[in-house]
Length: 452
Ligand SMILES: Cc1ncc(COP(=O)(O)O)c(C=O)c1O
Image (cartoon, rainbow, N blue to C red; front, side):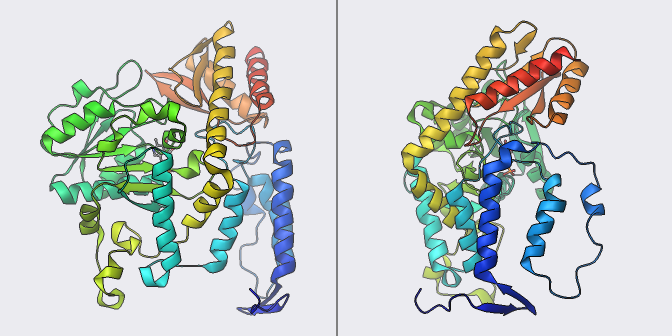
């Protein structure tokens, strides 16, 4: 870096900033935030419109210093932040943006590599292939699959449905009743039909109810459903897909990360037969939003579905086939691989395993407290780091309990509806969550239940 000017005041677009001074202040802000986030209310204690009302209606006419941005971040925006980085964030699927991932995001923004073509970003493109291969190996996937990064599992599943339609010439998507809403959204955006298959008593797709798949483009099986983290019977679904020439897409957006631990690989049985697979490191693998990994064993089908190369983007085919914009919806692709690379290197296999095992063992403890307590019931088998439970009594009682608990600011949880009943979900996934945090969550639940 010796050729780079140091400590220079830079004119950018009319604004003046000292990048180094402002940068240190921003890093200080980030470090202080991560140190004290556990003291803040988890769920933002604001009403709709509160934050907007405190912000000017127009952008400034003249440049302001970056310090003004940091000041308003503290004073205006922070009260309107729901803290996903909080150790008592237990809603939806709890996630962590780890420190190596955060720093790599800064570097990716600094480089601003835009991978429209291989030649516009050779390092970003090739590193993406490498981290996808590394992660495939860490999760026990077959070697040789083609992988790339999308922004979200919603986009990954959408892309898989596009490829499946192209490859099969059919227009029906099949998934379980508990398949994620992104599947229904993909069907709607694509004008494809959707058929939902009933689930068994453990909320898994009933393979015996798949029905005739001869007109199905794709079956989406889920490993780790959103409501309960149930694992669909992928081997039986793969048999049915193979018999009918149907594409098999596996949605392991949340639970896929757990496959870094060999003891959970049973949940990936049959996934080696999938045509495509999505896993989100931004859910449970310590990577900041957004980072969704999409693999396919049918690289050429993906390329056929997505390759549109106008003259201005044409390069020799040896380069074109490496351009990851040929395998998904976006042309301009950002350098997401950098943060995943940083996470994989700075945690290593052992660090990632520790993170997954810690979340699951905390969930086991919470599950045991619920099981032993009078007046509470467990509502679904616990497979990974999510516990579904409820207070005895009607749905309204549980709804009010959840509102009270979340309003306390001490923790944040979400809910699901199982067999028509409202249930509470406690999802563990934050790297900073300790047994004391989970214990506090249980104490707050018991306290608020007594006050209902
Ligand atoms: C199983 C499953 N699939 C897909 C999604 C959608 O993920 P994204 O927000 O990355 O689109 C979720 C979100 O929680 C999920 O739980």
